[in-house]
Image (cartoon, rainbow, N blue to C red; front, side, top):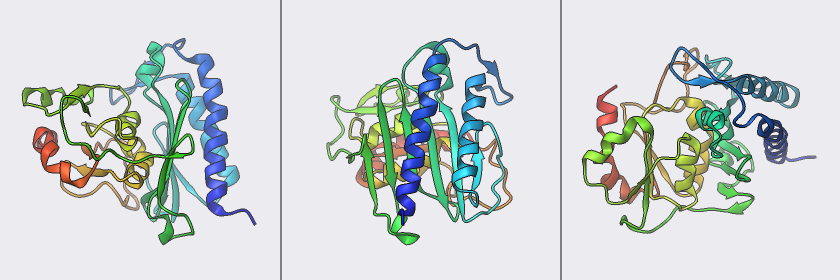
Length: 271
């Protein structure tokens, strides 16, 4: 019998690869429209969203689905996929090659598996976090199927800290690392998982920005710290997550949280 987690990984890998191949044909060629929250969307986002949702319904008919372009209310289902068909739509429309397809699998409202595929740069990340509590999956994080782990280095001007466009006020304080702005929430956080950066912050991520990387980053040894009261996960039954943002700090290890958190606490205060 095929292992459940083998099925999950194979589905995520083949689905994102197939969709990524089609999206590469549209890369840098589509005109976006503006959504009510000010973010961009294209016909490619909507097509990819429908393709992923249909694939989940065919392969995992008992699983629920939340997606940026579709359903936003959590039903309370035991298993739920949270998908972002194109994370980094602005990069995608402007011809900047860092953008990805993100799939997170929640068990009882908390992410325990994540998969993010970046077609242009040929990088695919996946990870299992606390999966052993619900199956035989072992914790672990991978890029292109090779194990990854966060860095044990100390902050310095030879290390990176990632920011988003809405968190640039961090530059008003001395930052113990070089700053990078990548324009994609998942890649921002996954670069910490690989050890490329020591930390990062996102001011307005939604649950579909966080679900996949929540599992991968922690499996790689990293720490995600909400900057507002309460935790992002587990999701609550009946809640609409369409307009909720969760300012989040990511750190390569717990010891660096006191170093980075004072730089970005203002993001939580703005909520």
